Amino acid sequence: NDRITSVTFENLQSKERETITAKYVIDATELGDLLPLAKVEYVSGAESQKETGEPHAVTGKAEPDNVQALTWCFALSYDPDGDHTIQKPKQYSRWVSYVPDLRPAWSGKLLSTTYCRPATLEPRGLAIFQDESTDGAKFCLWNYRRVLASENFSKELRVPDVTIVNWPQNDYFEGNIIDKPADQQKKYLEEARELSLSLLYWLQTEASRHNGVTGYKGFYLRPDVMGTVDGLAMYPYIRESRRIKSKFRITELHVGKDARKSDRAEKFEDSVGIGHYDIDLHPSTGKNNYIDISALPFQIPLGALLPVRMKNLLPGCKNIGMTHVTNGCYRVHPVEWNIGESAGLLSAFCLENKILPAEVYEKKDILAEFQNLLQREGVELTWPETL
Image (tube, rainbow, N blue to C red; front, side):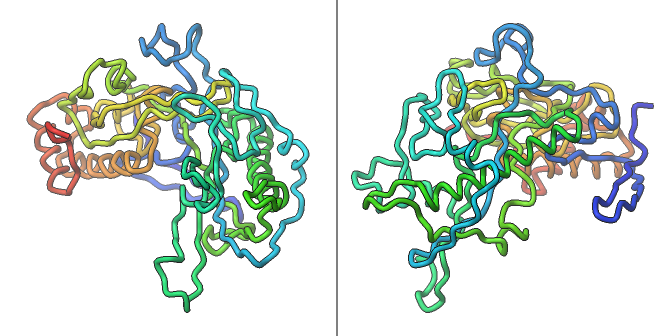
């Protein structure tokens, strides 16, 4: 009857299984893993311009294997007087000489302090620390994703900076792990880990410094921050998931500034949230370089959360009904959290009122009641008329 009645989970360590039954199921996995298991209609990769009408969709046929880079992040601190050089990674010789094969061309080697500026694709110099950018023009990597700043603590505490390394240099786009055999997935994920470890080793041993010294031997991993033995994240950052085929699909024509030729995104009367981020597509497995274009402050339409057929499954993150292009702005964490919160509230609302999500979408009075609930729970549904 187009419903999921239960989901079986397996403990990867003990191999024990447990079956959970529920009236509603929300898929909040990083890759939309429940969708193929439940035979839910979905897409992945890049749609074609012919299909979506988007200016930045791929020309020709759709490319299901063409997804954005994933990144195996890690937490890093710096001890200027120490030597914390790690063992040379197994794949270091590969990654230290690796030049991405992208269209348009990358700026040179991936492990470098030069990368492609996303908006223009022009080469851009990078500084590791702010004081190394003598003219103030270089982008500072250390401060970019710094999550703890020592300057906010008294010197007596000796609290070191912590930064999360999710940089252009450890974007992995040599393979797509969606719908691939387990051994191929394992290979690609291991390569992504090796790339991140190679970046750290390169920083410690080969990165050029402004004072003529080579390498930052004082960089060290923070397993205590990551909650892992080796200091790498528990799982890579996945930018692009499977996406449900939904009752409504969000395209570039709804939110792209240039595509709309407007200063307002499409207004969705069935809004269940808001978000804003540029359409930021990282280098992809289809060999596309950055696509970085302006997006307008947007809404999250309920129709994008409703599968075309399934009655009690809801997406809980970046697996909503959108495209490869609009994934570039809807994939960011605040939007994912809003999607998940609204999906949870929708499930509770439907249980309490003994109705289906499709009824909320199709009946204006019920939709208004649900939106009132969202607002009472603190979910913003619209942007101010003047921004």
